[in-house]
Length: 332
Image (cartoon, rainbow, N blue to C red; front, side):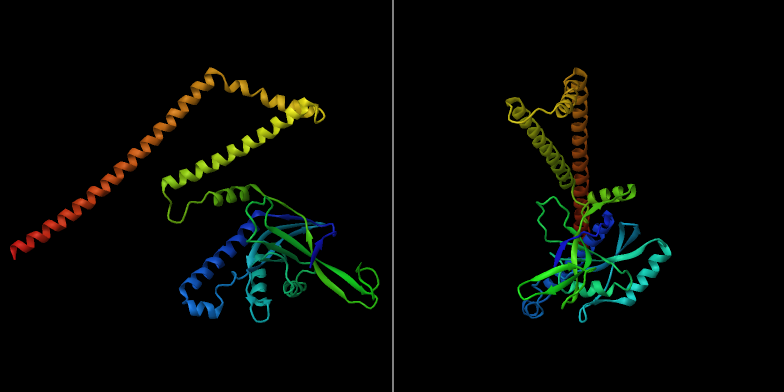
């Protein structure tokens, strides 16, 4: 269904698109599980609520400058479950609204979620060709392993290939060639892309990444998350230092050829280390360490005092109610 693209287009994807698609899928997933938990076991079996989370659909907008396609934003769309087509009236309304705010943006294509492009996706893709003759399909894979470093996002283009039937095999020829007893068909082809960000997007994404839980979260939970991040960073730094050390040992043994440029970079890095062993550094480090401990102890004492005040207020309220109830009983 999908192959590598050779169209020569350069795609630039902004993080806002990925955040919007992920947020759309997360909300649909939460609503799906909520409805599944509220249904009875028999109703769930009859309605098939044990199945996978429904896919989400939407449109992507941006600009195209020559051979460069830059996807800036996205919006949600409504899919008709019977005809498997997008709601055109809703799409045209969204397009008109975006045109008023962003007159230079155009609908470049659409997005969805799933492991790979499906046969039914081509129907939606063809339906958008009257708006954009070569729409872009952005696919987010929500079930991708977190161990992989690549983004679970794939961009597809549509390419027209001519299938020529011979008794012994099928041959695929480009569309500019002649067709012999064959039918031109439209298929999805994978395209490479780069992440393009601006300063406002970097600040927003960093803010979203450091959002607190909806219940506010405890101070211990936030501290644990902060320390976990620092531990991961130190662990990664340690692993990279080990790689450099092993490489230098192999270079010293003669297993790998000498690289003067790399040695100069390592030497420049090592020159910074003696400054950290100075007496001034130790004094500043210990002073900051003690200040941090003092602030931590002060926060603990403040938290303990607040907890004690709350306990005293609850005790006073309970004792006051008990005294009033006892007074009425003795009076009666």
